Each structure stands twice: as structure tokens, then as C-alpha cells.
Image (cartoon, rainbow, N blue to C red; front, side, top):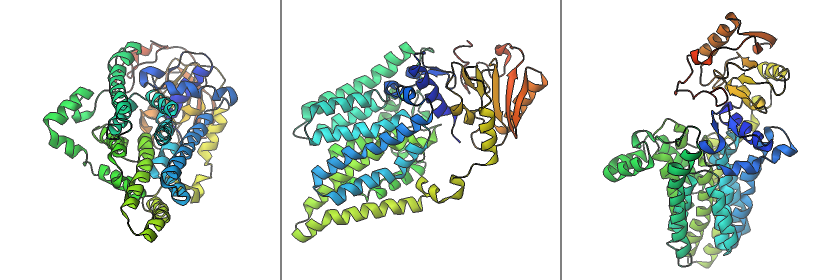
Length: 466
């Protein structure tokens, strides 16, 4: 129930790093640093020296996102001097639906961002310059678009008395790094010679196009922050979970939060999950909202003059945070509710069939498999996502239908695809269990004759085969 894109893609590349192999992914049709500036992934490779299993990535991702709660707690405790409120902020961060889905949704490098964000604001509270530098470097090597978040953090610091100079340098550094990466460095190292993630839909193709659109058509920009209405729902869910405290936060903490929402909302497709909380895109805002909650609550407490009410403010606020978090998980069906469902713990027959066939795949052979099977099979030099890799020694498919299992094909296309391979005797079945099949190649074919070859709607053909 996981997929080649993205878990298999990351797993293949990071496993190859652990083996000293060039981290080209046949699953993703790219190499690690041309896809995103995600140097952070090199630090995950040693995990495979301890446990050669894709689940090492899933465990590490969970640990990193939850461990970010420690510096968050230390910030809250130092700023508010209230333990109950500090614990409640961490509780809300962990059970925020955006945090849950970031952990649940495969594996992504962006889930390291909350830890670096927490360390950054911890460094400001404790005036620790070394931690500040560490956190900035961490964000810059996690993903190229986090350079804009770094710049926004710097702009926010311009509104402080103590950190104006640091804020100016940080803002310039983040802004410069972003454009250097996407226009110079990443196209230079790319096999394709271009940056892969231009195209913001109707907002424009490049960041400069987006800026031009915002400047010349501010009405379009304002509408893009509201419509489709999923964006308003995201804003409501996000702020209501945190008791609306972030609204009252000083501008230094609001600017990075606004940047995160703007960069997600100005994008107009086709990856619509950027707008909601059901994917990994909410990972940075989960921590930005948490930090803003601390300072928003502090600001409200400072307004209160009555000593009795002032002393009760943080304990009451703690109850508000916990209550709103639980309420949001009930109303909006947070993933945590799955632990109460019997299906969450059961293996269906098709899953058991797949495990059996997976165990029959020889190690190290070249292999092509469908989207949902790849994370179980990517620890090999040559592995591809069907319908690519048609000269692979083996192919594994499971014709028990389900969501996203066959992407970029659909169920009927996959059935026809497998049927044609068998009819033409290019492959034959060497093992079958239920609807799961392991096919072995009889002879190689001219891949240029495939209708998928060179079709940019899917992905360009694999680096090894080209």
C-alpha cells in the first residue's frame, strides 16, 4: 500500500548511495540532485548499513518529525515558563493533521524541515549562533524551495532589535541560493540539462513569471490564495488546531508562516495536494504554526492585567490547544483514527499473495514492477516502474485492482499491457499466486517501438537504456 513514486524512488537512490553507486533512480527517471537539491538524503544512507530495508526510512522519518518536538518544548518552556502549556504545544504539533499526513505519506525529504526550523528558533531564544548556522544549512540542503523560507525567516528578523543584521544576511542568502540552484546549479548537473519543477500552472511557468503575474494582476494573486475553497479549509484547519493563537504572534514569526502558505497556494496545479493537509507539503507549516502559537499566546497573556487571570492563562490555553487538536482529529478524520479500525491491522489475501511472489524474485536481477510493488523491490542496480524497463530480466505485476497501483497506467491498461507481453511471448509466467505474477524475459525488444517511449506525459526513458 505504498508506491514507487515517491517511496520507491527515494529508497532506490538512497540505497545506491549506501552502496557507493551513482544515485540514479530508474523508478523516478532522474538522479537524486537533479530532482531536488536534497543533499540531506545522503545522511540517510548509513541507515542501510544497519538495516537494509526501506522501513529504515519510514522509521527515521517518524523519529525526526517527532524528535522536533524536543526543541519546540524547550522554546515554549523558556518563553512561557509553563510546563503544561509547553507540553500542550508539543501535543498539538504531533497530532496536527498536517504532521500526521507528513509522516504517513510515504517518505519525503521535507519532513526534516520541522526539526531544523525548531532548532533555528531555539537558537534565537538562547542566542546560540552555532545552532543558527546549523539550522540554516540544514534547511538549504533539504530542498531548494526551502531557500525561500530561509529568506522569509531573515525578513522576519528585520523586525527585531537584536537580529536585524543577521536577518538581512539571511534574507539575501536564502533568496540568492534559491535562484542560483534552480537557474544555474541544478540545470548544470542535470542529465536533462533543465530544472525539472518549473510550471506553476496559470500563475506562470517560472518564478519570474509568477512574480510578474502577481505584480500585474494582484486580483489573480488574491483569488489564488482563496480558491479553490480547499485552501480556506486548510487555513481554517491549521489555525483552529492551534487554537488560533498564531494569529496574534509577532510579525517575525508570521512572515515565514505566510511565505509557506503563499508558495503552496500560488501554485495552480497539477499537484493539487499542495493546497491541503493530506500530503507532506504541510510539514514546514506544522512547526511554523507551533512556534507562532507560543509567541501568540505570550502576547495575549501580556495584555491581561488581572494577576489571577494572568496566572491561569497558560493552563487554560493548554486545555484549549489539546481540546482543539482532538476536535479537529474527530471532525476532519485525522489519520490517527485508523488505529481504531480493524482493517488497519489485517492483511488481505492479495497482500499475502504479493508477499509470496516478492519472495520469489531473484536478488540483483533487473526488474520492472508496477507502482505499488516497487518499494519492496528497489534494492537492485536496475529497477523500473512499468510500463518502462521492458528489457528487464523480470517483471512483477499484481492484477488485483486498487487506487494508484498501476500509475501512470490504469487497471485496464495494465491488464492489456501484461496480456500483450504474454501473447507476443516476450515474457512468460514463472510464478503465480492469486492475481500476482512473476514474469521472466524470453528475448529483448526494440524499446523505441514502445508507444510509451519518449512520451513526456509519463517520464523519459531510463538512463541505463538510453
